[in-house]
Length: 240
Length: 250
Image (cartoon, rainbow over all chains, first blue to last red; front, top):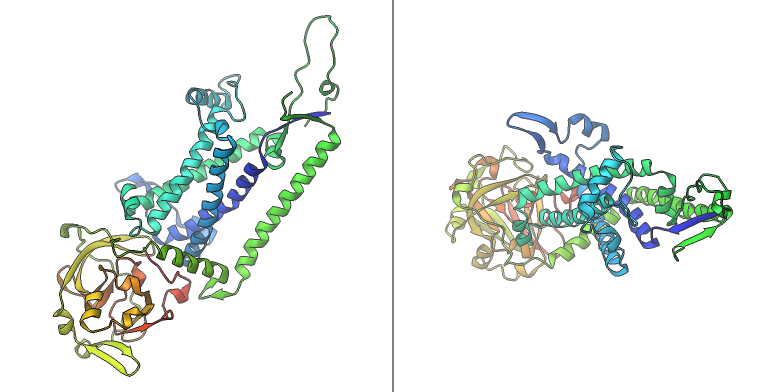
């Protein structure tokens, strides 16, 4: 017998898995658009440390001369991104799930402990509910990033009609840079997320598809000559 | 044990897992199939039809936000660049004869107006310094002078024509052409432009007369206007035919 615990509600699983291909298309079509004016780099003066992006990168992915295709995809899939994101935030608010995701007073301090733990520099994790403190900060951060991408995107898309928004975000050229930086952050979030999911293992990944996780059996009791009641989960020593 | 917890058999666990993953895999298949389906759809002006329809829908929706009170941000004269970028020469044949040029305005079939550059210069002049935005993603603060299209239309009695849905503009060699929705061409910042940085337009910027329309991407700022006509249907548009959005509004 196995003890399972409900982890992710059905709605959140749908939002999550719809979001994945939608963001993939947004980043891909964004690249097709960005190529037409690929001015960003990391460096100072004449010194460039990192160019966004090297020609070999464009060539390998067949990106050049696809601006029109990129724009048409971007301005269609933006609707799926917006609607899915809006419903997700609405669901968090109504269901109360936001309490499990938004950081609380302890999150900042605890997230540091989580990072140390993940880097094997500290034993033991602070007590947590559904998500640890670092996850709370990351998952809330990514919601804020999504809202940021939406607003900066709208501001580049219609800078004259939404001129107040555009001015608030620092003007047309700044807004484009912000939109780009947010995309880079999304990509970094994605990479870290994948690494963490791989490290967390099958039980955790299955949870995002099935909704439940198997609760590991409690450690076998130690010491004492008293009679033990052997729980069902201790009888079966099979792994998850 | 909370209500979120449950004890189930190995068999039940396996069954639940298989059901959920089956749905998951079917959805992945749908996504892949949908992506392939999209790219197999017939093209409408170089874009798959579903995307084209969605772009047209966007035009209708964002067109509702359009207002003559929404102005492109303007800048002081000192902000304008000296070296204005030249980004295309479609429709700018070398054999153009400026000495015989007249702006041709097709009012109705059989009623065509010819206007000289001097006649256009005699109309009230408007100057603008704004951030010219290319569809490629770059922008440049530039200084232009000319007559507002709306002033021109009023002066030449085009009231009936400007009640139509679109304006079409074509270069003298017919090599480049744009279609523009009437609200955008009648916007107070839209100019029939004959000056750049206070001097007559250079040849490569569309001498003698070009369109400056700050509420649109650069692709709509047609250089060297040969003729203008009015229509309720979308006039042909060079970049629209090459997969871009017809509206291209900012």
